[in-house]
Structure formats: C-alpha cells, structure tokens
Length: 135
Image 1 (cartoon, rainbow, N blue to C red):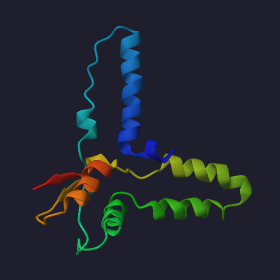
Image 2: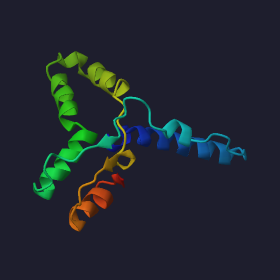
Image 3: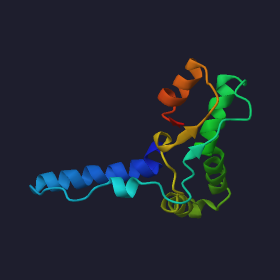
Image 4: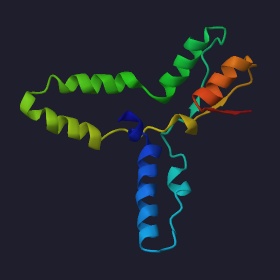
C-alpha cells in the first residue's frame, strides 16, 4: 500500500509498535517522535503554485501534487521490474521496497503565497491536500 511508504507512515507504524510495547510492559514512554519527524535536507517541503493560478483548479492541484509525489517515477520503476527476467522479479521488487526514497506525506508540505486564492481553491489545497499555507 503506497500510503504506508511515506516517511510519516513508516514512523507512525513504529510509534504504534513502540506504544504497544511500552503499554504491555507497563513502561513510561521516553521517545519523542517529533525529532525524527522534523524536516531534513532534501525533503523539499515548500511547494509552489504554477505561474498562473488562472488555470483550472484541477491544473493547479495537479501541479502541487506533482511536486509532493512524483508517481511517474514509481510507475517507471515498477514497469522496469517487468523487463527483469521472471526469476529475478521478486528480488528486484524487494530491492525497490528496501531502497524506497524518502517521501513526506502531503500534510508536511507548505505553500507560501502572496497571491489571493479563491476560497474554493484554498479549501481544496488546505483541506483536500492538507498543505499548510504560510505567509
């Protein structure tokens, strides 16, 4: 499931196991996940609007999503697995999973905009995609 491959998805899974372990053994949690969730170099969490927001909402949203997650890159890698000899495909796929690039969830991204967005588009960006607007 692709959602579980976001960095936050992996960390949240770890948190669930950690919390269950601590609860089971009656221990007080001492690990704070916020430090590990902090932005790191290379995360590219700031997204930009297209040069014209006069485009349709679908074009603007597609532009933002593309910056946060390049699904075409994953598509190309998965298609490449079909060119590998059949007896090597499982190992190739496991390699893709083990070496998956760090991808942040949409809600970690921010959009700095001095442009006035119409209310419907702003709602789609903030509530729909979960991007935080910053001044």
